[in-house]
Amino acid sequence: MSLVALAVAILISLPVQDSVLASSDMIPTSRERVADWTHMKTWFDLDESASETRRAEGLKTLDEHITGHVPFTDAEFYMELRRLAALADNGHSNVTERPLYRQFGLLPLRAYWFSDGLYVVRGQADQAELIGARITSIDGRPLDEVEAHLQQFNGGTDAFFRRYLGPGLVFCPAALHAVGLANHPQRLTLGSLTEAGEAQVHTVSVDRESSLIVDRPWRYLSPVPLQGETDWVTAYGTENEVPLYLREPSKTFRYELLRDGELAYIQLRANIGFGAESIEQFVEEATRRLKEDMPLSILLDNRQNGGGDLTTTAHFGLSLPDLAYKEGQVYVMTGSATFSAGIYTSYFPKAKDASRTKIVGEPVGDRGRFWAETSADRFVLPESGYGVGHSLQLHDIEEGCFDAKLCHMARHRKAWNLQLGSMDVDWPVSTTFAHFMAGRDPVLERIMGQ
Image 1 (cartoon, rainbow, N blue to C red):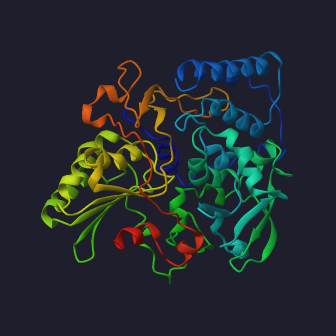
Image 2 (image 1 turned 90 degrees about the horizontal axis):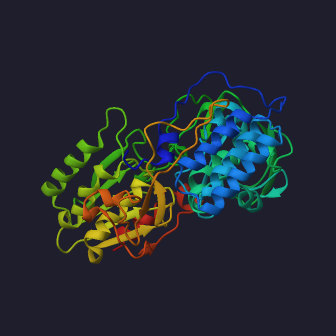
């Protein structure tokens, strides 16, 4: 199976409406989970990403849970499962996020982690005082302390967790309560700072119905209503001019000419097609238009690209330096939500012509060496039904990966097997909440200023 980012599989394909949420953790009951723990042992045999030391640690813990008849509530079990999978420390080998909103429930708020902190960017109207506020504490614990503790429940980089997975987890009281970070499984007391710098404290309870309103983190930034929203407000009002990267949120792929045709802006919000949108057709059309428009430079925006299938954009990415005018550049825009196949697509132009390619923005959301590629059969635990991602093949974007038994790219064209040496960003640019509220995109501004 082609390189598929778990973030894409879990978040992009989310149904926003579902059956009535379970309420098992309203009155937590404990069970031993022997069937699930036993099956989880086979996950450590299946997944290739964990080191032998970490694998042995995980198997030992599972045996202790089984033979010791250790009881767990649903939320405790879920978080312990996340901790065990995170021993692999691999971004593609994590537990599904779905129980957070389908089973345990979220606060009626959605947040986004900017370079300067976690900000509430939308929520129910009765929580309007929190919209636009920066979260500073949860149940009296500093947010930095909460975040640091939660890192052990997710494999991969801290930056990807913060940008892509953390905002949902920190607003799930049951999950936080299960690991000692919240005082109650159904509500949280949030400390925050308003835009004016005023400290405030609000206690907010889980809202079971609105917990089903879930989408990709960047989508919460757009003022366009999400499916299922009623009486919600956003930090970014429709009266503001939405920056280019947030426009047309229903589209996965976009092509626009900027500065009177001098620049071609290409946005990939995934590396796989969805619904009627075909990435193969888009790439073909974008290539045709680039040849016809002959822009001086090309801007490839992969900041929202959580991955998919690298083979759909490999030739396209490698061809971009040749499709820009000879005096121009290829500017690739990246961030910590750039993941999996999105990383390959970002660096194909650099591999083809480093002298004419600039990486602009923030570092991507994974390390240069990682495991991915799952089997056709999902790994699902028999009792809980929770899915756990597993990874079978190695990638090494910095040094290349050539062992045909281990390495996915050894099975593809030589030009696709990247050897970057370094994945450093050429022009580091961060985006703050103030930039967002002002309708600014400092990454695009850095490029346009050339």
